[in-house]
Amino acid sequence: MKKRMLIFFGAPGVGKGTQAAIISSKLNIPHISTGDILRDAICKENTLGLEAKSLPIKAN
Image 1 (cartoon, rainbow, N blue to C red):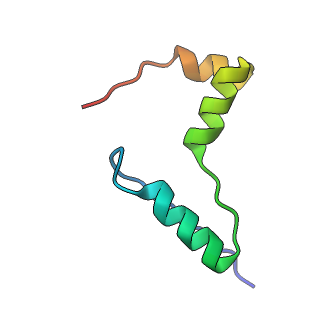
Image 2: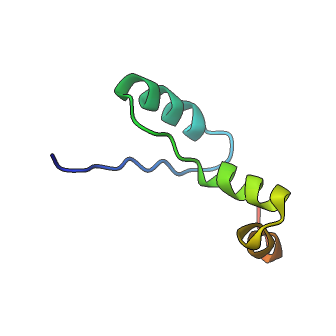
């Protein structure tokens, strides 16, 4: 079977996580959130977290 990926991207607050969670639940597929992964790494202050924390954050 061919593997497929869905990637959601957009501005903050547009519902990416909500839609991903709904689809993940209905299709029984994993929901991987890079934002959640990075926030967790920053809290744990591991190598990834320290690298992410050092990057400038730009918001409109």
